[in-house]
Every structure is written in structure tokens, then in C-alpha cells.
Length: 48
Image 1 (cartoon, rainbow, N blue to C red):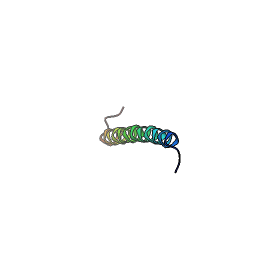
Image 2 (image 1 turned 90 degrees about the horizontal axis):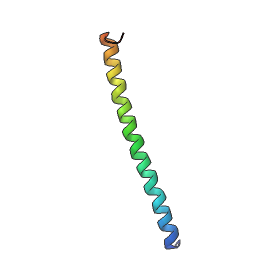
Image 3 (image 1 turned 90 degrees about the vertical axis):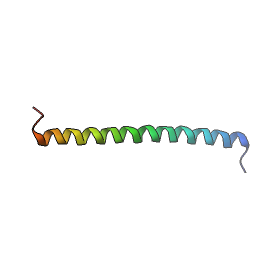
Image 4 (image 1 turned 135 degrees about the vertical axis):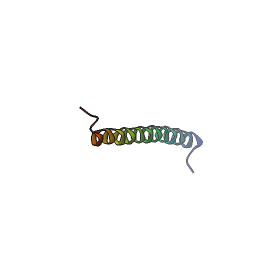
């Protein structure tokens, strides 16, 4: 079993990675929403 200090360091790194993944997932969802909106406007002829 690794020392507790190493386990804590690993846990900290994993938490940071999970936070980054969550932010990137939110960005992707926002971009998908914008894409759908843009496509809708394009097909309605609202984009000049």
C-alpha cells in the first residue's frame, strides 16, 4: 500500500481532473445548444 501522502497527492490530482472534465462537459453542452440554435436560425433564413 502506498504511503498516505502519496495517496492524498493522487486523490488531489484526480479531483482536479474531475473538475476539469466537468467544466469541459458543460462547455460541450453549451456549444451543442448554440449549434442547434444556429442551425435552426439558418434553416429559417434568419441569418443574413
